[in-house]
Length: 545
Image (cartoon, helix red, strand yellow):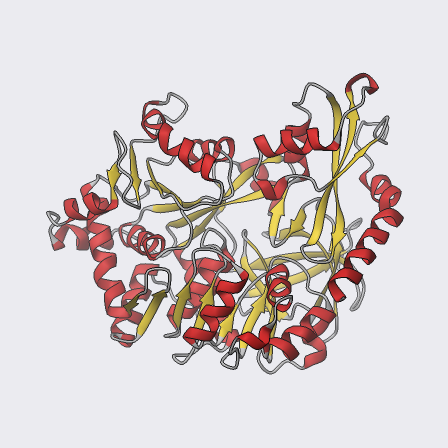
């Protein structure tokens, strides 16, 4: 039932099968690549990596917007057994340096082209310092993916030129040493304990999850998948790009999500599939769609956070995506549940579907751990063939997430009906999901409490019409001194990615806490429930109008 092959082996099979069919389109440069092109370029990139001294098991970090180079680096690293470390492009320097150090990356790929120009410019300036930094003892090489020349770094074109001197036999030898259960990627994901954790996924789980997800999405050779989801997330890389490739679909890739550009590219390229998080669909629907020919659209999935019934109906009626599918997953297990083509509309509107083949689930009482009855609420536990190897160099966190019997504790509150369809009821974990991004309240709290005027801080979520959830920070100032909300946001923006900056700031004299000192966040949520329900309703009225 499962394929015991590496990603490189599977892609070689697909490239041989689909040959001159269009595999990857990149409108920003008006270029496209056939499956044969992908195979040829993957070998060139792999030889370039070998020429730089990359060996099986080495960790290669990449900080880049979506691009053909990103995909080719992934496929080339996979071919020789290197592990690609995928870094969020919204990371601050502090977050980036943490990931580079914690992942023990020896080679770092980066490019310009980010919204935050100051960050990337300053990063470019410090590249030579990165290589000499005592805090990054593993980092040996930096490769710039565009034409920016920096002292002590290589251009991608230079790497490829070096690779011309590598014999085919050396590439074949390197590839022969790579096995299906070897690590393929490290994806960094937020957690409830502050710093991000590096999720290690191997070839086997990645390949097989992409296959079953693509099958349930009914991808085929006639599909053209508009990709604006970032490649540094599994929903962009595994469940969209690889799943599409494996069924002969073409990937039409944008650097990032931009509403009008997405609509134009769908229209100009006759895209049949659009995958996104709820806020992306909401942004599309807020435009005058009569200006675009979206008649080619027929498929898509929604991931990242729960989607309302109202939004689902609008996607079907106004975007024409008849087989829209709710997809539920976590980086630690990639895709877990997904709707299928034959599922009826009512289930599409309020459930996240059934478990994928190879996935077993339990719904357990959060107090006793025993299975609950059909229709009752409990924590979703998952045991599947697609579970991560673990968190890189973090066995303690791994053991907290996956119990001794192999069940992954999702932290999500669900119910499951007798037919096996699952409905999300809420979250046990403290994670905030804003626009599809997992955000750790503990991380934000830790940063805020470094401000000299902030004595204590607690962060909770509040509902948001567009992004699903927004961030609210409760602040206790030092000595009860006065402070402006703008000061809090400015400080947060200097130390965290922008999507983690709290939208709402509440100043209170003391945080409610248990006898052991744990903040009672349920009390805080209840305290602001009426206030933010009013804000939510006001925003909903404006959006509807």
